Length: 175
Image (cartoon, rainbow, N blue to C red; front, side, top):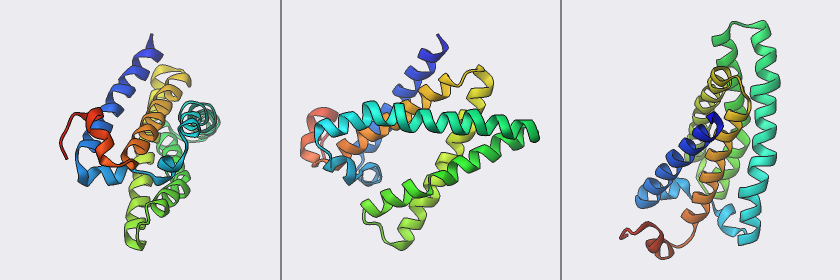
């Protein structure tokens, strides 16, 4: 039903984004994450298939689209509650943005830009996930979408960190 539709659409969209970024060297570096590349295959699989969906996503959705949204909507009008929660979700990602920028050895200005883009993107994603929660009346649809985004991006981050020659058969493109 609704859960499978949103989950499938998310996977298709994120795989498209991943393939496009992988096929363009100037974008590939923005996707790469040496932390994912340094993991063993088993650890990476556990991270992508267990930690992300069951720990990160479920906890963030319970807190941000469950408890926080319920508290905000009880006090503020819907648009203010939606954007207030979204901004807090974006700010929550300052640490992960800094961690990724540091792992990619970005210099101070590039690190600032990376974190600013991370916060802006996760704020927009947070607003969309709240909207999805409101529209569907279910917390599980945002969970599926959030998990699909994070899991797919983590898989592509691992692929993007590997040497380019190993990706030619995967993408079917020349570098």
